[in-house]
Length: 162
Image (cartoon, rainbow, N blue to C red; front, side, top):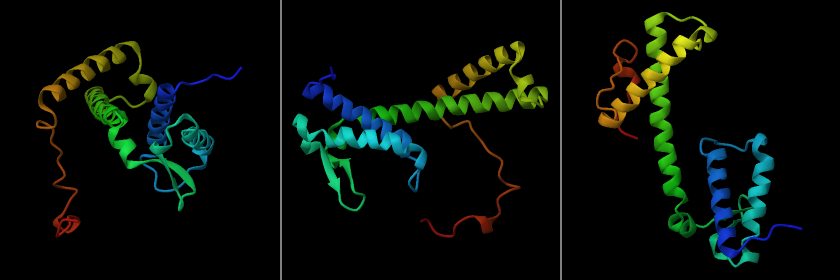
């Protein structure tokens, strides 16, 4: 027997579809064949909105030939807030991981991936990640500096803002 969703549950299902679509496509500039099956499921969810009395949350995009969330739905949904929080946390966590990895490799001269994740190095890596995470929590990017002076010339920089 098929699962039945209440109107409120279907709205949450649409939110999940919007989150999935964003994760799959946020950095894409053209169609990705690897996500086609997921896109078809997302389309089915959006197309079913009308049956659940949620037709005002989606619109048909003639140019793309697909249903898309309306701007009002995107604005009133908490999905964008959740995605912004996720994106922010992902940035800081990823930066802490990469800085810890770079620090450990620079300190120990590690040359192979396998060396990096032996028991001792893994413990040190976790400790460094924690230190970087604490630093970023306290100071954001204020103490991060990159030395681009040897790699970037005035000719590389735009003359006027875009």
